[in-house]
Amino acid sequence: MDWLLLIMSLPTRNATARMRIWRALKQAGCAALRDGVYLLPAGAATQRAFEAQAHEIMVAGGSAHLLPLSINDAAQDAQFRRLFDRADDYVEVKRVLDRLRGKQQRGAPAVLARELMQARKAFEAVAASDYFPGAVREQLQALLDEIAQGIEARMNPHEPHAASGKIKCLDAAAYQGRLWATRKGLWIDRMASAWLIQRFIDREARFKWLAKPAGCPKRALGFDFDGAAFTHVGQRVTFEVLGASFGLEEDDALMRIGSIVHYLDVGGVMPPEAAGLEAVLKGLRESAKNDDALLAAVMPVFDGLYVGFKDEKL
Figure (cartoon, rainbow, N blue to C red):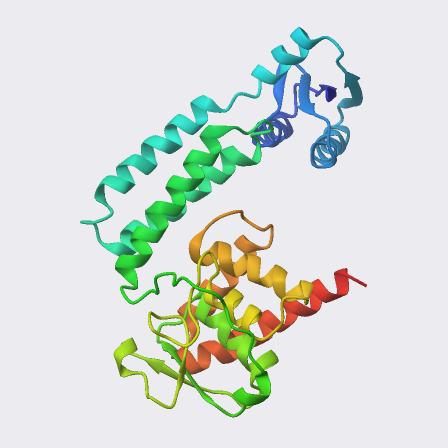
């Protein structure tokens, strides 16, 4: 296997630089072979991490040498891999998640949501430097998703359950100028679905925000609640179901947005853009006076994301 070595030295007088660089190396998950000698598995991301710190070291008046290292000896390679065992770090994350799961049915949902966010950040910090992931990471990811769904169910009791069956192919021409209805208090799947409807399905769409799904007008097309015309089907969230229903799945940019929506709504594999989009949407939700204002604010966000993904394909 291929590895990277960073051999460095820093002047003793620059304690601030030493601490800053040490923290950065620790965050990157480096293994210390001895004082001033650090190891990472070879790769584009680890190369960039070492190059960044080598630059910092030089700026601070030290010396840095970045060297590739190939190991052909299986025993030595295994010894190096053991230096990156994250089992102990995951134990603490699991302890936090077990406590959170134990009180998720009796604690205040808003408080639980904040604790879950902190636990997710702790998990992601460990996972970011887990260069040889195994079953433990998968189990904790599943546990995180399970707890998140439980808390979401308490915060949003009308969140839809996945239906079974096939998704019908529909002609958007028959769905123009319609009234579309979903639950008020918009979040990711409903935000993104409303954007998809207005931009790609029904440009004259009007929206109604429901206090309860039972209040959906008969003439309206409901989405993202049990019994709605468009809701979760199988493993797909409402945004993905709408895309499949109206033949939009060949648009790679929409599918990338769909993967982000899926992760933020029900969990799974985290796309790199998910955390940033979540932060932006939470900020807009906090500052919006009502759901109409919120939708108006998030439309340009999804527009920009779509154009950005489209440009990457050019």
